[in-house]
Length: 136
Length: 136
DNA sequence: GTAGATCATAAGCGCCTGCATATGATTGCG
DNA sequence: CGCAATCATATGCAGGCGCTTATGATCTAC
Image (cartoon, rainbow over all chains, first blue to last red; front, side, top):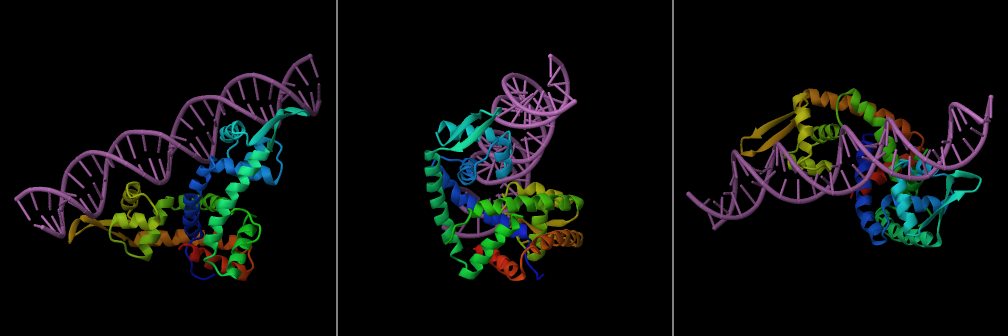
C-alpha cells in the first residue's frame, strides 16, 4: 500500500469538524449528541432493554440513563415496564421524538451533503460504501 | 444523495476502533497519542514555534507542554532556544525520536492495512483519496 | 526607552468519559 | 422455597479535554 498519513490522523480531525458543525444544530433542537443517537437508534430498530440500546450505540450503560431521563421528560421517548419481565423498561420513540429526530437529521444531512459535495460522485459513493464496510 | 447513516455515526465508531487498537501499540513504545502526533509532525515538516506545532496537530497550546516535556526527557525531541528570538524554542526530533516514530508507524500501518484489506482495492484507493480531500 | 505584542509556561475551571461498585426489584433455576 | 443471575439505576473516582487567565521573558514599533 502506498505512502499515506495514518488513518487515525485522517479520521480524527474530520470527526472534530463534524462535531463542531453539528453541535450547534443539535443545540437548536435541544437535543444532546447522545440524545440524538438514542432517537436515531430507536427510530430505526426497536430495542428492548436499555443495556442493549447502550451497547448498540456504543454508550456506557450507566451513563445513558441521564440521557434517557432527559428524552423522556421532553416527551421524545417512552419507557414502559415490560409486562412479561418487569425488570425491563421497553423503550420507544414518541411521535414528537420522531419528528424532532427527522428535523435534526435533515439539518445534519444538509451540512454533510455539502461537505461531501467536495468529492467527485464516484469517490463519494465509494467513500460511503467503504465506511459502511469498515463498520465490520 | 441516497439514504445513508449520518456521517458522524459512521466515522465515530471507526475512530474508536482505531484508538482501541492503537493505544496498546503506542504503550508498547512508551509514547502517548499526542506524543506520537508530535513526533509525526516534527518528522515530516520542521515547525518553528510550539504554538505552530499545536495548531498543526489540532492540540491545545497549553496542554501540549506536558507532552513536549515527556518527549524531551525521553530524548525523543529537542527544544533549543532560537538564537534569533529567545522567546522561541526551536523544536526538532532526535535520531532516537525518529527511530521510535517509525517503529510505531510500522506497527500502526500494519494494523490499518489489515483493516483496509476488507475493502476492494478500488474502493480503498477512493476511500483514502476522499479522506485526504475532506481535510479541506 | 517605553508600550504593546508575542512566546512558553502554569494553573484552574467545568465538562465528559470510561470504569467500578452498590442497591433494589424481579426473574428463573434447581 | 431459596439462591444466583439480570436489569435499571445511582454514585464515586480518576483522567482527559477545551478553554481561560496569569506571569515572566523577550521582541518590535514608535
